Length: 561
Image (cartoon, rainbow, N blue to C red; front, side):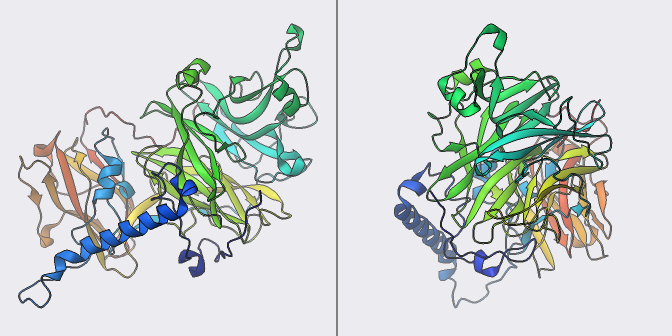
């Protein structure tokens, strides 16, 4: 079935036009998340319910002020001065484990004076790998890992049938800049024929490469085993079996795997996207990101979690772990695929946002407190990896970031033409500081923002922050530390003696003159003031010997031999 254009236009690189931003059909990336398919089955009912909720919320906001109209002696306060942590965030975050470091974007809600901002990447203009023998790289769906002192790249090429059939290809590099298409002893760098939408990751805990997608695995011909009739049709031979999860010690050959029977738990699951997975050490889960689809909203992001990738464990879920629809757009603006990864206490996703009318695909940043819960965009209209003027002018599909101290490397496939038209696709590279993917800052036109954080367990005697500040008026200051249950007296500072940092960009800098000893082990809320153009990225409790956390502070594994 074709997808009808909605006439939504794309703005210049990195932004979205006002026509799209204020289109009558708005993105349903938050409120449609929890209605379990009602959007597809009963769209008018759901829209009516949404309108009723909005009106009720508006009435609740206005009602407290109606009685004070015309009264004297009232005082006005600047919007957002005492905001920050609302009911929505309380439901989404709850009280999870403690972490050595927290991402600021998850500590407070946006308000009229406080905004979430997307970090700024540095892009290389150089093409690192391009098409040679491949019929068409198309979207590419890149996966990159650093293992055994070597950079490794897996990517896809179209084979036939309008790219419905793909092969998985392999390349290596000593420095991550000059890539060689490893022929593996043959004429071409193919490691998997008919491997569609496949992402590859290296799980350091088990020292194994894991592939996730829809692919054909060769059976041992000497044993005389034939694959199923379905596999024989799809794979074009007798000795193949269909699989969706495969494991290898080398990442090149020796793959062993099994199929996931998602028809029962996720009938709208699709593999025609950039499927990818990772092992979340803090949550002790495998996180599998794939696609959900409906005729009403088109492509959407779907995520499943599992505590093991063994076949028998998947059978414990009665066919497969459910695939939750986590980000849902519209037919005009669809969420094509997402690469998911942990970042301090949050989970981040680089979402490929597809604009149907223009055929462009933008890489935008989303976040959530848990893999299947409360996903939202850091900024709905700002690109994380902006489209470029040359080889990546129309399309960006990112790989999961890899840490290469002191920066993160984010490889991506960029296309120079629209998704539905003629284009060439090549490998590019963007870099960014590991703690600066996203942050909080005063909203545009606001001189400052004051906000309260969600409750945090104090496990250090001081606070450290990562922030950017370029002028003397750009500051990060602490106004108050409040004990949630009120047992300990709050720690409050006057305006003339606020512990803060100004006029420089620093990593894990300690706020001066702060002693949180009496709050150790207690739930506290922190009240911050950001001035000028300061951006707060991370917050951490710090001591010489902090208690052992239940989470992990390493958002990305460093390259390891």
